[in-house]
Length: 210
Image 1 (tube, rainbow, N blue to C red):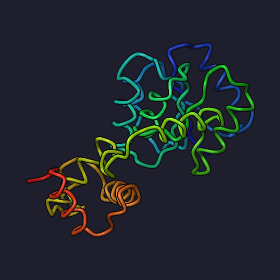
Image 2 (image 1 turned 180 degrees about the horizontal axis):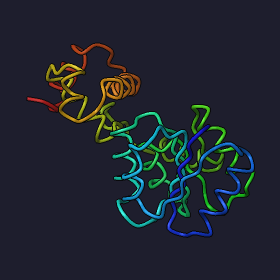
Image 3 (image 1 turned 135 degrees about the horizontal axis):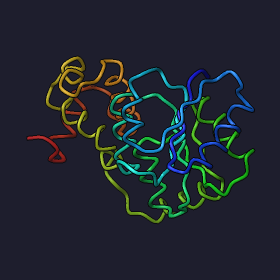
Image 4 (image 1 turned 60 degrees about the vertical axis):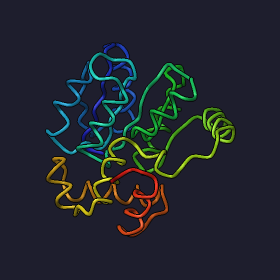
């Protein structure tokens, strides 16, 4: 890693996380921020290798913030630090684009493990949180594939269904073609719809486009 962003409105928390990161990764450059608006300002300034975001800092809510981060940078690993254990909230945060969620009361070793997991391309949740999510999902009624897409993914899904090319979608949304292609790969993985024709047929059948 080269560039790490830590955003939390509590300076003591930021400093503690910073020290842990630098202890494990002494050569990285760490940027400390205090709110979500500053995160959005700093987002385009460099290629970030990791973002550690407090769930309750000032500025956009974490769901909106994650959506805007993913709208610009689809692949940056994001680990959210939270004090909440509410399962529905955890699920929504992960759907919005977090690669991992870590409760703030966890030990330093757990934070470092979470960082290693998400920077390696994986997902991180405490075992008990993952088990609770699994139980919650088993209790839910079956949903249609598109209902699990994020707002941005559903927007791109509809545009694909209407016959828009990746380059056109990127231009309309201010995204690179690579970012749109990454979203499309996620859409295919989550819905099982591979071709643009399959997406169009599904969208028509389920009233997503006219």
